[in-house]
Length: 368
Image (cartoon, rainbow, N blue to C red; front, side, top):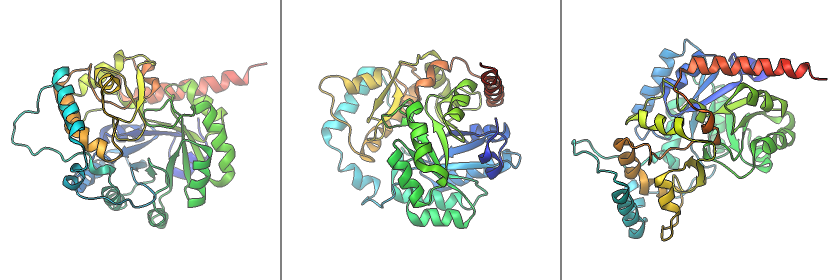
């Protein structure tokens, strides 16, 4: 289970683990893969800097990367307060009534200032994430919204940092390579978070063929076992990009009752996800539950465009997380959730992944 990208990036296994948790990212890197920290949750660059310092100090000198959310063209945007004025009152009323009906209590009046929304969706904030990240010894910058602006790619390359971009179609991948992207993540619709409509098994070879020698390709979506890693390699990928797989690890802990999230995910089946715009304004695969059902019911308003939708539901997400009710958790997760049936350490999951992949490759070599 070793490909050319391992030597290029100094990793033992071609397993890239996306996660919003610096603790999980560090554990993935220590286990031989590359932990990739999702930056979108950081409104405060000092908090991101602290998370990256944690990675500097807890990866045993092994490589790690970051993931930002940055459109290639600079959109017009205002402050959070200015943007909130663009949110219709109908949508605000719907969210308030839905939370009341689902029994989600208000946030405690503890004197802490409420968040303004996850401002990492804004181009200006994502650019500040890049500024901070390049002050650390990162080995990869990935962009969840395709190719970042040309100057960001140039700055990364000048620092010796390869750039990755997610793609849901072959034409997206060709555009990435033309823009100077080094690694294309072929993200199938099975994946959690923002996804397209093409399955991983169809998309991966299409993108491999489309980019040729122009970039490395990682397969993403529906990968949660060594057999599926072997399948991705058979499709021509140089490795795999995995996100949902790490959500039920022992190391996953963010603010709020992570146990409720893990309880919901461990109990879920592979058919209990839904692709919806209600999380950010762009299509994203989420855990299906009472919260997502409410947005699909008759009379529910349509989701707003990014970043307004996230600003709309930001406090709702905080309240849902604080409530600790596994029947309403707002969590992006892929269809692989049906295999996430227990809470285990990252190192154990990685070891199992590698062993099963190696066994599968050997078994395939014996077929007649």
